[in-house]
Image 1 (cartoon, rainbow, N blue to C red):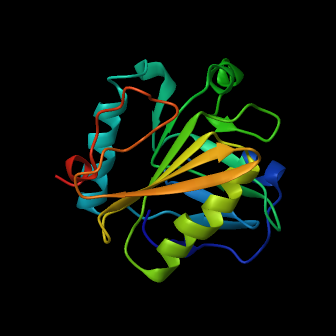
Image 2 (cartoon, one colour):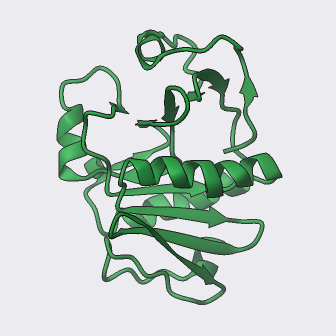
Length: 193
């Protein structure tokens, strides 16, 4: 996601964030209690996310794949909610959303199986995806977190093993290894084609 602009300096609780109505269909994340408007992605990042969406559809039911439309509550100093570029639901996380009027995975719901973020340019964005989200998704014990880095042309696959993320970095024509998708036949070059 691109660098976000803060709309409020007032801190919101998780309950206040979830009670907000969004008539304008603007995307917001809650970062340490601060409401943050998410601007549109770059065309390159959108293309990468769409390529990955079609790749994931080879291995998962479309109903289990979310494309920039499902919030995940995370922990931090204050309340937080993230909207990943892509995610693959676990059976439990998908079932937890049944009948809900908002696609939000709260802390009391099972986590998704996979979260994918496409890094936007700039130090703020890099820190957010490599540091903050890495910690937040680890705290949710999300089994896999992929960091797709167009600037450095690499993919970092973070796998939840023995209570922490083990990170593997892939570049160029290397095939990405996923515990979730054992038969995955995807190289880094193919993601950035």
